[in-house]
View 1 (cartoon, one colour):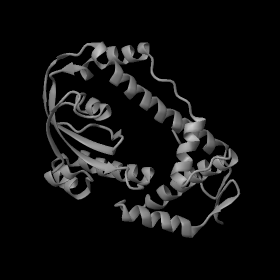
View 2: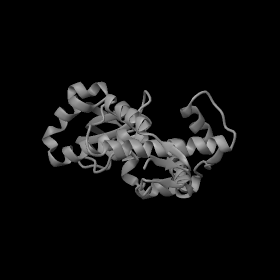
View 3: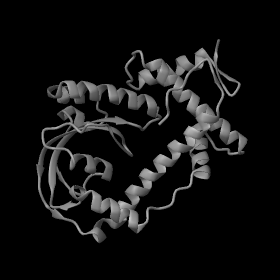
View 4: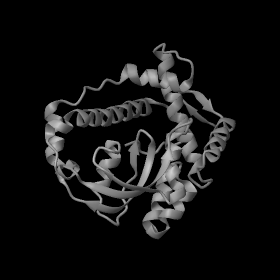
Length: 248
């Protein structure tokens, strides 16, 4: 029996095409590939179907999905109280003159990459890195989409404010010699981070970081709201012949 989403069949040809696209983008051809492809197709079909119901049109599927989320998901900019609370709860993230040296393995979300497949691949490589940290440089050369991959992922030394907030927060909350325990998602994709050195600094005043912190918290809230909206579409959907895993 074929998989169907709200009465629309998801053909084997479509699934195979999605799997081939994922493999061409570097996703390992393992036991998770088919599930990842099916899940991505289901979510896209749900969003495109909802956009059709609402009369949303654009030049391509990605543009339609973007327009749907822009129309249906509304997030307020983080206010000063929220920014100050985050600032006070994360003092280690706001140090002036603090520097670090780190390496990373980047899994890019550019050039039409399918996010769920990219994340699945990144999680697989993170498990390998955690099991064998000494293999970090070799895995970076094999898998990183950043030019630094050819240098084993090494980014050299950098200070506060030189990296995007999500990356910076992970680096400056990870001890030297350690691997950040989770994937770090930024506008560039998913990162596996290894911190090689840290140098201390002085606290930065709240007013000096408030604007950047507001942008960071608002972006995180937007991603969370998008995820919650997609979860509502999934919860309301009738999916036959496939059990979608928990969408937390």
